[in-house]
Image 1 (tube, one colour):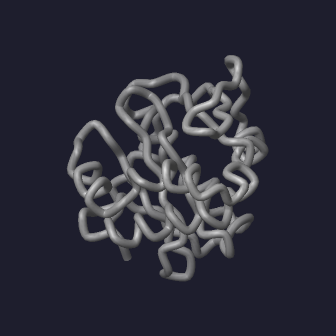
Image 2 (cartoon, rainbow, N blue to C red):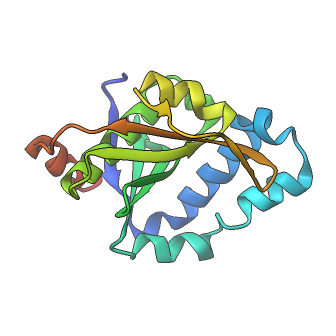
Image 3 (cartoon, rainbow, N blue to C red):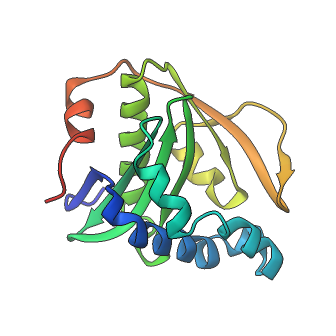
Length: 173
């Protein structure tokens, strides 16, 4: 993992950059999943606009974090108080530099601090190997949603640590 990765809690001011990171990651990084089918891409991205993201950032049931690599926003992830990781998106040119791993580990720390002993998520085919690398395992039959294959996965979480709690609350540098 790159030592210059910094993970911080996203703020309402980050809604625009979050929307751009998510949309670009879906369009470019997830092409295997949507096969550049315009309707599938539109369905996947329609709820990722600034107008949709802003309320998420002020909802206490959700935790959004942002990865900064060399002080540049390169990824974003979100989890909910229900124990689910909703998404993790990284700009394609920053793949395999540790930003996604750092984002998910931070979400796992937040979920553990919420009292969860397991994190759950639905992966795409594109993300499955990434999540397996982080210790997630399929836990149910895959299914189709909006033309995409969703793979239910889960992972046991370690008890909360003070370090993870402090990292989740760290301000942006």
